[in-house]
Amino acid sequence: MTSATELPTPSNPGPFGHKLRKDFLFPENFTQFNHGSFGTFPKVVQDDMIAWHKRAEQNPDIWMRRDLKPALTETRRKLAELIHCDKDELALVQNTTVGINTVLRSLKFQPGDRILQLSTGYISVDKTVRYICDTHEDVKVIEIPITFPLSDKEILDKVEHAIKEHEQLKDGSRIKLAIVDWISSVPSILQPVKQLVDLIQSHGILVYVDGAHAVGQVHIDLADLHPDFFITNCHKHLIHPTSITSDYKSGFENEFSWMGTTDYSAIMSIGAAIDYRKQYGEDAIISYTHALALEGGKVMAEILGTDCLTPHDHQVGNMVNVRLPLKDVNNPKATYQYFADILFDRYNIFTPAFKHGDHWWTRVSAQIYLEVDDFVRLGNIWKEVIDELNAE
Ligand SMILES: Cc1ncc(COP(=O)(O)O)c(C=O)c1O
Image 1 (spheres, rainbow, N blue to C red):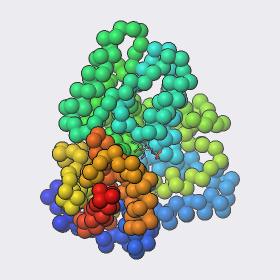
Image 2: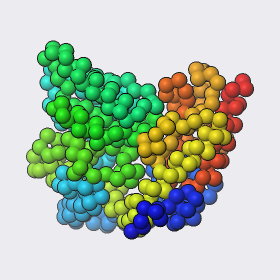
Image 3: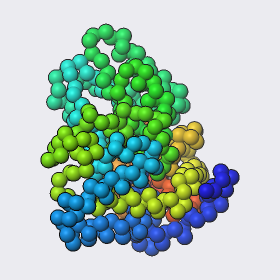
Image 4: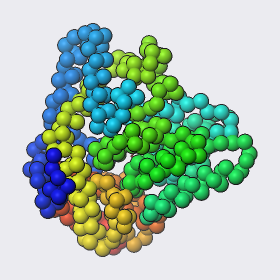
């Protein structure tokens, strides 16, 4: 284990930087800056996934009927060790969207129940909440408007204020569930998650932590955080898979170990991904990518003559939001799709652009194979794109 003083940084990258590009699958002329949306895995993880796939194809009956469940249990054990929870309280589902649907559609909502969320929550999560409201009598959403930058205290105050304001209504309704992000998507901001969980639970409200971006980006200790629900980690008894199978009511871990006839190879390769990270250590990966996001964001902001969204470095994980210097924030040409097309087609590069508050921003994800030079190149590309729009 490296000591804190030896942890890799952009100026002292240790094993990281461009030399690690060889571990990944993208072609020579392409640099991936958007792990925040769709990650790409190292080749060894893909090899492992293909091996699981082959094993299933070679003898489907032995795989599905006998070997699958013990293999899934071993994967859950490895993941549980990483995020500090009991393996039997951890279920492997296809993605976070399935996770939130699983929780929301398992809970029993009564008339008068309210669901608290922040306006910066992920769109599919918001839509699932709206679906629950649409399909239940008098179940409503309470949304707290959030515009960053905000300090941790300001975030906590807003949540506390909304809860207390609701308590004063005394109209028989109650906030049953609150949904908070550990790291919001756009803009990407690390939230004071531990304090949020404590605050919400102290008012007798269930709390679901959307940790879509958290695994691998921050240290996770669920034993310490003790949320009621965390991505795929749901407390027992309340929750069943969205697709009910022959294993209904056979125990939480068992129900989630059989999702019907499907390809389990992606889920099975979680073990190989954890092993890949172990060769460097979580501390080293988190330290390098966090420092690179901070430094890379700063360099891009200098090129663009702007700034990064949050002045609080601890609110940055490995994704950084850099302001785009668009003169007219309401320029009708400036759309998510316009920026995506121009980046794909002209520059063979991509980072998502989005409007938040009074500005346009782009979110850039640091990775172990990136260096500050890559951010310089990206900053110059964005400058060209925005200068062109401003000149029109
Ligand atoms: C905060 C947050 N929640 C949920 C999701 C949905 O994740 P998935 O597409 O893996 O279901 C995302 C995706 O980026 C996200 O950023």
